[in-house]
Amino acid sequence: MPKRIVIIGGGPAGNSCATNAARLGAEVVLVERDVIGGAAHLHDCIPSKAMIATGNARQFLRRVMRMGLAEVGSDVDLEALGERLRTIEGRLEAQTRTLLASQRVDLIHGEATIVDAHTVRSESTAGVTDHEADMIVLAAGSRPRIPDWAEIDGDRVMTTRDAYPPNTVPSHAIVIGSGVTGVEFVHLFESIGSEVTLVVSRQQVLPGKDPEVAAVLEEDFLRRGIRLFKGARATAVEREGDDVVVQCNDGRVARGSHALLAVGSIPNSETLGLENAGVETDQGYVPVDMNLRSNVPHIYAAGDLSGRLPLSSVATMQGRKIAEHAMGALRREHHRLIDYDKAASAIFTEPEIADVGLAEADAFSEGRKVRVTKVPFAASAKAMINDDSRGFVKIVSDPATGVVLGGSIVGRHAAELISVLAIAVTNGLTVSDIHESLLVHPTLSEALSDAAE
Image (cartoon, rainbow, N blue to C red; front, side, top):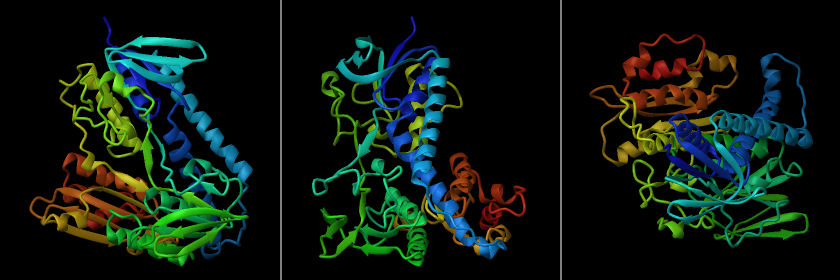
């Protein structure tokens, strides 16, 4: 008899698990209450990158005179931009539905609640149904965190999901939070024509990232006229007529037309009925082992709910690994457990930032002996052609073996270029493997070979 798997949440983790488990012979039910494809993915990740692409295009038009073209002006049409975002979301959701249908996944658009350790109840327009399950997969995602000192109105005081796109182009946007999401919004707002103030609770943007990488971004922000309130923690957001006022704990005050909160997320676990199955949580997250199992062995958690790296790529991989484990497909020679330390990530600012594996600062703080090589894009012919020589490639390797341990890239197309280093880190390749590869000239990727030399 086929194994029955019920998945709660249709984001990257849930969809990946559903399609892979179905291919391996499982009967799969997937319950999603919001958008098929995941709210965090289709309401946060994808629209933010689409809006950034629009802002980048506008910034490019500012630079065309240096490239031999007459100056071209361009204002942002928010109505057209909103339609573009809806079109992209619609296409991606349709593709996901088609894929699930092709694998005969029973897709239910509704709410899901765990009744007991082997039963999930779905409530939809079709009615209430109890689904018996051999395995249950929790992939319900997360939502923006709203601190108690902020009252969100979705107009002038926004979370990220209120800003795709905003109702108007802010004349002065105050971004609270200097992590990945915060700095992406700083770039986005400035690139579409807003003045921007960034409230930075630490002494550098992107806390936890390579200080040299953060310094490049800070320098670019300052060059673009962005105000940085470093070492300031927001304590209140208030509306004063058409203005928004942000109070900080050090007495500084930021006044603008809009404020956007980018202060993290919280897991969507409180309404799942986890207590009915004895599933343990930690601040709303579900702790998991190396195979993504909760304390109840046949109940798994993936994506944001698992408390691991909140990346769509990681969630997709987690979903596949759960399917393989649940279906007993682990004897395959190619199967690997997920090594989160080797996950590549990117920040879609301008310039882009990407990294993978061991960071230089972490290596030194741990007392590890490493070799660090860095090549600036200023030495790249392609960067000169692009009229954008900002940034660098940095490779961290083992001095004895040459094995690539990690790396950082700052510059145009860094999110694409990091894939080379990600493959090297994952597969234990050496700097010689990269340097001996015949790359295309002229390209930005040549900097990878130069840094590996």
